Length: 628
View 1 (tube, helix red, strand yellow):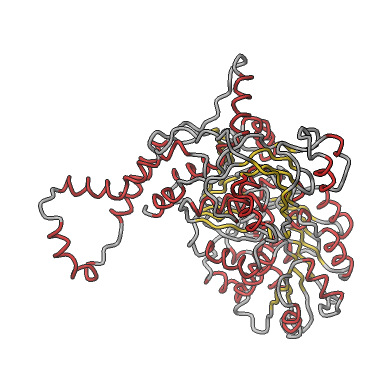
View 2 (tube, rainbow, N blue to C red):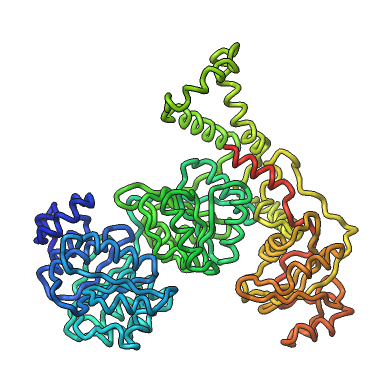
C-alpha cells in the first residue's frame, strides 16, 4: 500500500461535523496507523488486517471512517465492533460517541458479560447503528434474536490477538459466519499469530495488510530494563524499584490470581498506595479499583494479564513484570501499556538467574535491547526520596490567605531556630523513618557464584527455602534495622500433620500456602514444617499449639472460589509413604502412611524445615511508608 502524504485530519476526506468533534477532543495530527487506515476505509471496499501496538489510536483509525460512511437515518445495525473485554468495549463506545457528538441520530450501544442482559436488550430496541461488545455476550444476543446483524456493513475485530488468547476463537468464528458475506472486515492486532492469519483466510476477501510497525515488536517510546535477583528477593526488589521511583504510576503484572493477591496485600500492608485487579473480584469491585486507578488515586495496580485487558490509561510511567509471562508475546501487550500517546515509558522485568536466556529471546522478538540495571541500594533510594520530598515542598502552591491565621503561632514556635536548623529539623522529622528502614540495607543483586562455590551456594539457597521464608512481607528483615538475620528455627517445635483440599491445580506453592494461613489467622509466631503439594490437595506440618485455631479459621472458609476442607490427619509429620502414590483418595493415603513419612516422588517438596511465617515488623514498615 502506498504511503499517504497527508499530515492533517482535514486532508483525509472526513466530514466537517466529525472534524469539529475531534478538534474539540484535542486531535491535531493523525497517528501512523490512522494515516494509513482512514483513507483506505473511505475509498476502498477491501478488508483490512492492521498491525498496530496498543495505544496508537486504533479506535479513531476505524471509528472515524465508519462514522463518515454510516447512514444515520437507517434504523438497522450497520457496524459491529468486537473487543476482548468489557472495559475496552465501553471505552471504544465512549470514544465513538465523542467522535459523533455532532451527528444527530447516531446511536452507539455497548454489550458485555457481567451485566444484566435485559437492560442491554432494551438498549438494542432503540435501534442503534453501531454495537460494540465482547464476543460472548454478542453471540448470546444473536442467538436470542435480539441482535439483528442481517444488514451489517462493517465488522471490526479490535485487539484480535487478545480475543484469541482469552478463548474467544469459536465465538468470533460464529459471529463472522452469521454476518453478510458482502460486509467489510477490519482486523486490528498488536501481534500476528497464525490464528489471525487463519481468520483472515477464512472470513476476509483480498485483505489489505497495513502495518504501523514491524510484526511483534515493542513500541519505540518504551525503554526496557531488567533486574536479576534471587527468587526469594523478588518482592524486596519490587519495593526498591517503587521507592527509587517516587512518582511511579504503573501496573505490576503477576502470573496468577494468588500471586496477585499476595503481592498487592503485602504492598498495602507495607504502606504503599496499591491495590489488586484479579478474577476473584466482583464486577462492582473491579470497576471501583479501575476507577481509582484511572483517576490517579492509586499509584500501583497489581494485576494478571487477563484482568488488566481493556484497561485504557495513557499516562502510565512504568510497567513492571513481577514474573515474565508464560507466552513471551504477552510481554508486548504488557509493555505497550506505557509509552502511549507519544510519551516515554519504562518496562521493567524482575528475573532470577536462570531466566536470562528469556531476556535474549525477548530482545530478538521485539527488536529492542534490554538494559541490565542493578537493584538500587539503601543510600541511593534515600537520596532520591529526600530530594523528591524537598522538591515537593519547594514547589507546593502556598495559599497565604488560608494559612495566614495560623502563621503567628507557627512563627513563635520556630523562634530561635536559624534557617539551617529549621531545615535540619524538617528533614529529620520527615525522613528519619525512611533512613531507619534502609539502614544496613543488604545488596539484592544476584551474584553468580564461581564454579568452586556453586555447590555450596545451591545448598545455601536450599537451606533458605527450607526455612519457610516467604517472599512477601518478610524478604527485607535485615533492611528494617531490627534484625540482621532471620529468627533461628525453633528445633523443639511440635508439629501436627494437616490435610487441605488445595493443591497444584489451585496454584498452591509453599509461599502461597503460608500466605493463606497468614491472611485468615491472627497467629504471629507459629511455625511450618514439611509441605507435600499434590495436584488436588496438600499435606503440611503446622505448629501443634495452634492446630485448633488453624482449623477454626480455615475449615469451611472460601479461598479462590474453593470451600476449604482442612483436617488433622493421623499421619506422622514429614510425609506419606511411596506405596500410596497411585491412590486418588487422600484420606486412604493418610491412613496407609500413618506410621511412615518419607514420600518424595510426586510431591512438590517446598521445604522441610520450620520457620515463623508472619513478619512481626510490618506495622513499623506501614508506619514508615504512610508517614512519607
